[in-house]
Image (cartoon, rainbow, N blue to C red):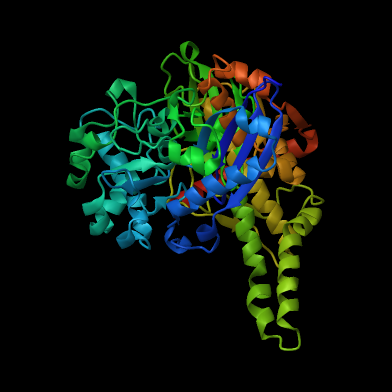
Amino acid sequence: MSQNKYTIGLDYGTDSVRVLIVNTANGQEVATSVYYYPRWKEGKYCNPALYQFRQHPLDYLGGLEESIKKALLNVHEEVRNNIVAISVDTTGSTPVAVNREGIPLSMLPEFAENPNAMFILWKDHTGIAEAEEINQLSRTWGGTDYTCFEGGIYSSEWFWSKILHILRTDKSVKDSAFSWVEHCDWIPAVLTGNTDPLKIKRSRCAAGHKAMWHKDFGGLPSEDFLSKLDPLLKGLRARLYQDTYECDYKVGELSEEWSTRLGLPKNVAVGAGSFDAHLGAVGGEVKPYYLSKVMGTSTCDMLIAPLDEMQNRLVAGICGQVDGSIVPGMLGMEAGQSAFGDIYAWYKKLLLWPVEHSLKYIKDIPEDQKLRITEQISDRLIADLTEIAEKIEPSISAPLAIDWMNGRRTPDANQNLKGAITGLTLGTDAPMIFRALVEATAFGARAINERFKREGVRIDGVIALGGVAKKSAFVMQVVCDVLNMPIKVARSEQTCALGSAMAASVVAGIYPKLEQAQEKMGGGIEKEYFPGKARAKVYEQIYLKYKEFGKYIESHG
């Protein structure tokens, strides 16, 4: 009988949860499945006009059970019996209010339909005012600037902004919330049957990048700072956590309940949770000074460097620098764009409006045909736009866009900012605007690279992963030309889940360090893009226009 051991990587994304079962000996991906959140798909608990994006824990639990069980249907009994560990990654910061038992309030009957009792998704920006207050107090209160390891600017996408906003706006949640838990911490707690908020093992990645946790502070920001920020936060620090754990830490084993529900042995180890982009970088075989770009609805740009080489250097304007947040023993640095693929999706939705809303008034077309027409146009739209847009040569006189449709994450977080397009004429068509939007997202990517370099952090190469990197050669070539750097695309279709599976192999003791798991389980590089010299030269000029236009938009917002 084979002695191969297998791990499960569980990847919670914005729209779905993905499962990957991996052979730890060689990285073979033996089974996978995807579960789309039903409530999220219906648009429940969200209000995009108010930047409100919430998700129900029942979507997460349904995804946990159904995706793993479905994946297990496709493997031999030998594989099932030799699964040794599960690790989880999620979006973040995505916290939820919980009661004393660690149950999300939205799982209680009285809060079942209350959006404020749901998980507050990473891209929820309802806490913009609270983020600004955190920034202002950090700079003026006379004590430690708790944003110093967060790039110097705290964001509405992060832990404290979201919590404070909910406490201020919903008294019922405020009165019932004992503590708050990140999604990436809650799932391992559920799997092990230990949801006590005071005992849950909290992620170093989540705490360091989003909650201003740092060992130099003795943990989270001080009680004095939080109470000064708002008396509503008084006492909450003591109901959260002090210690944090890296992704190679074993938090426990499957509980009897989840062993039975999933059909797995009880001795399956469960690893500490982490964020999707961070473990995506691991799955993409990140190495020091290689920028790992997780390119999906947004982007997360991950960089690692040896601690002794960074020498306590603070990098301004990024989304945090945390010891061990990506690879234990390395400094993990995070940057990113608040919208990337989301911008293309927005434009698609914009163009589909007349199809979806005007077609219904045409009486001589049967309803089933209208539905098919709408679906077929929707399915083809981005591909058709791409076919024409990629034939358009970059030009200094073409339309120019700013990619801040969901605010700006890096460099220098500012979620109040909005996108813009200039240079339109009566001759401007849909593919030209689409190309301008793609170029804008590429310029946003370049701004991140330039910030790292300006702060003294070199970038030796770029590794791309995620849906956009795998699906759109057009977008990747534009980004490559704008960066004027080669871009390697990771082979695995599920790099985040693969990174979780790698972490699980260390949790189970198969490998002593994450780097060894990467070497044995990595999928390698599928494709490499190279910049075109002529296009790169034109983009140097257009990028200068992008920066000037951005300055104008920011100062006249």
